[in-house]
Amino acid sequence: MLNEIKEVVGDAKRAAQVLAGADIAAATLGKSVELAEEGVAYVMNGEQLFYHRTPMRAGILATYAVLKKTLETANAEVKLLDFDFDVFEHGMYPAVVIVRKIR
View 1 (cartoon, rainbow, N blue to C red):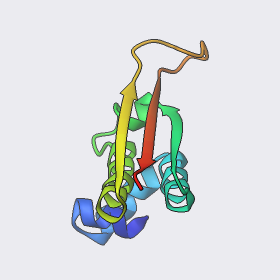
View 2 (cartoon, rainbow, N blue to C red; view 1 turned 135 degrees about the vertical axis):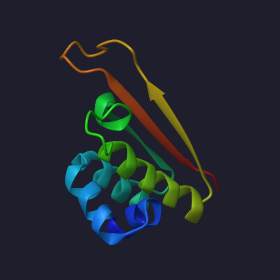
View 3 (spheres, one colour; view 1 turned 90 degrees about the vertical axis):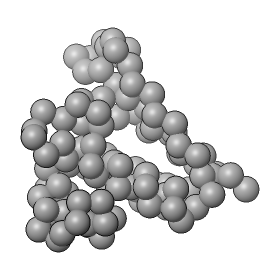
View 4 (cartoon, rainbow, N blue to C red; view 1 turned 60 degrees about the vertical axis):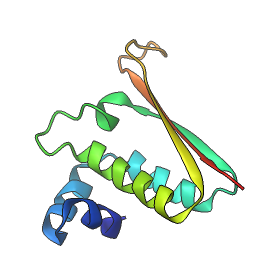
């Protein structure tokens, strides 16, 4: 995953910072997409995916790097859904990432 982030941000030091600040969900998403035959759907913390509060936006960059690699290496389509309410009533607004591999 570090190499994918490096391709997006440009250098190894900054890529390591992004990876350190990112949510584990981005790494899990990347490995799941790699292993899936047809696709995956993930419910993630919307704040980590779209609205990370740090200036670097690590969650956004890490997830973008994973999805960018997926679109470049597999015949796939990606859908991102951002909810503006607490769907599960647990204090966080969710986001959904859907990756479908096209045969």
